[in-house]
Length: 381
Image (cartoon, rainbow, N blue to C red):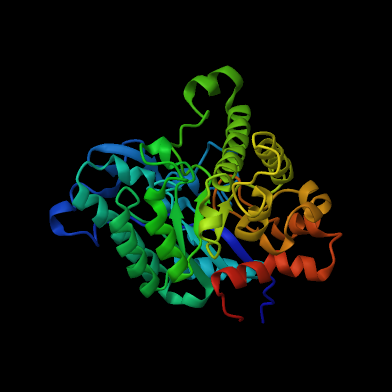
């Protein structure tokens, strides 16, 4: 019998070819995201006639060659990337009871939906993805946590979709930590209050996954030519991790958390080591800009972080060994990021020991299990 010790708070589904074509109205099927085999022999995603991604580019678990090398087709990927039963079998091998699921094709913040110029089709694509997720996990809904997309370019439609998603079993909302980069209002704008209100009503946390803004990174041909693929990849990774730290700072200074004290936010795939400096810097600068004795809110920004913000880590050793006293250990989650290039694969327990080996059992259990179980209402095995 498998002994389960982990709830994995960030993984991705390598979407199968029919996610959208089998679920949108017939009039959209030739225009939505669809997979084709390219002349180069790769499974690629098209939106209309434009290639938007390569299926295997974010499915590197077990591939054996360094990024940007990737499996050319779905058949070359680890089967757990795209097949739910194979994913469960892999989870059993590792001792992972449940996984939280995020997208690939439409962007880590669903921002590629914004490139669709037909509002009806945009909404149909969001709804199709959310329906696909619930279909995919139907093999064992206890062991998967689905994070739904929303049509956040339309707040009223987003509220309706959140209510529909909550009824369907979704347990979190994917949002952009940098909506102003997408031409939308800032996080602190009251424009978003109906979304925060319905998320609170439904008990669904808001998730900022790295790369959820405009997704303009430094991994580009010019950077690769200048420094090589390995250096460009490493820099881009750090750029994205710290980008989420900046988005969380924006959240702490937005006024959203004081107005919605029961609403939780999750910074996904960004690590935790940046948090102590960011919190100290935010508090210091906040007080520096205020008149003596004046406060905008009842608590300091760092207090709202400790009360309402979760963070996820996977590879770090320094922060989980030396910084937990500076954070709220009840709001730290563990992830593997399966099956992305940066994921833990074949070394999950080794990385856990490298980071948490010196921590007491109750701290380990909180980070590896209890915090995620509480946040996402995950049932015991």
